[in-house]
Image 1 (cartoon, each protein chain N blue to C red):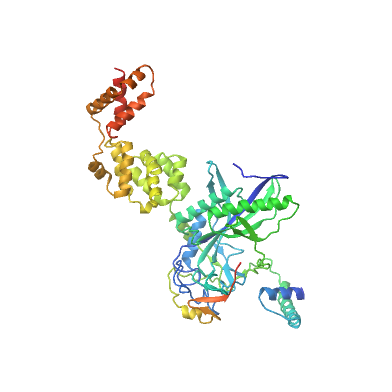
Image 2 (tube, rainbow over the protein chains, first blue to last red):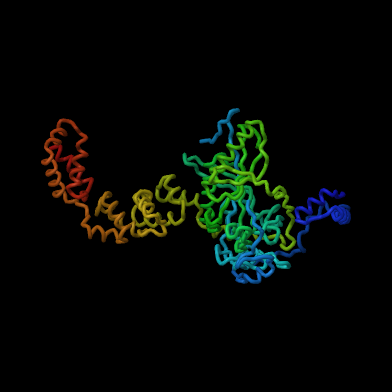
Length: 95
Length: 484
């Protein structure tokens, strides 16, 4: 499978990354290489092997329904590029 | 009754499926320990996980899983002992992670069904496709500043159940009945408060139209409708719009639309042209969710009696009609109230009074049954007074009104106002004779065949007795005297 520049541009747009033509072509080659490498997996016969998600027999640890977090507004807002009092602010989004 | 749109080229039917987002009742959020309580100071119910800080790991809240399973059981649905969480990728200011954790390919709950009842008494089954768990987003405020939107993440990460119906709905009325039934089940089980005004239940509405016998045509999705009335209205106007497009020779584009209730129209939301490319993939931070059959069985055993079962039992146990059981079982508090009154007085009397004067008094005073100044034992006491002939039905209405106003007990009011029913035949007879003597002309008319005047004499006698005569005795004695 090989990737065309249109697909690269689309992926970039979905990820909100701006690319010039040279970057797009560079990334196309790079991604093409990654895909080709991963595609080697297709050579393995996995007809009778169930998909493995996660590691072995591990089950997720669940949490009890108790409030143990929150009340740290300053920490939450510490990386905000812009804020107003208790809120994050962003350029107006109206539909 | 089937819903049809008469167009220029023929008759159209509508096809509707609903995706309901129901906020799960829990203390903490789906993947973090921050509070899931509605409201609160802005950004105070937020953990670093909810805020999408790098390196933070989600941990599943077991109670949210239990709530989804309980709901699935209430919807007669298949419970999947293994389900998975996926990332749904999109950018929006109220979604700090850049993706919503949801369940795409392997939801926790599969197919189920809901029985809905329409106003003409017919019942229909609406299929449930699936129910899955996902995170809610934060809240944007657009009216605080001319150039900026304000973001509050308190709601971000709160657990939602998305409940998807089959495209089985064929009229706006069915859509309304389905939503009401779903909300009733959620409230019975206690998994969502169903409060559409606060946004804890909202619906995406999929609408298409077709002519009889055709396969499905293209559908449009109306996003985020927040009341049952608006869901019904939006279906009506959207179906009409699509019929007009098809009949003008055009084609309906599959798209997302918004319902503008002020204008009574739906509008295209073209701004997100790539919005549907969510690039779902399994969330690498979360192992598949595996639950035990025994745990599901225990949750099932602990479920409360559900609306349909309650209705059947009320009908069998108290002899109420199908219609009456529907009204009584609409809310658990109403059914509980009824059962207390029915047991303490008389089941038939209890249902007549609750559905009649008692509900009327609640409506008039704008109170819910929980806030009623007359509780179940208060109403039972009143009905007992009717049953043992202490007061008659007409006086009882007056007493009930007084109870709502003063909060006094029925017997206290009866004593204070001297409302005891007169069952002394001598007193009733003398009242009747006075009335007949004072209305000699009417008596003569009656004797010459004007039977209808019987009612007039009853009315006059009751009036003379200030309404306190025992109606059966008044009728009986009047008949006897007139036959003399």
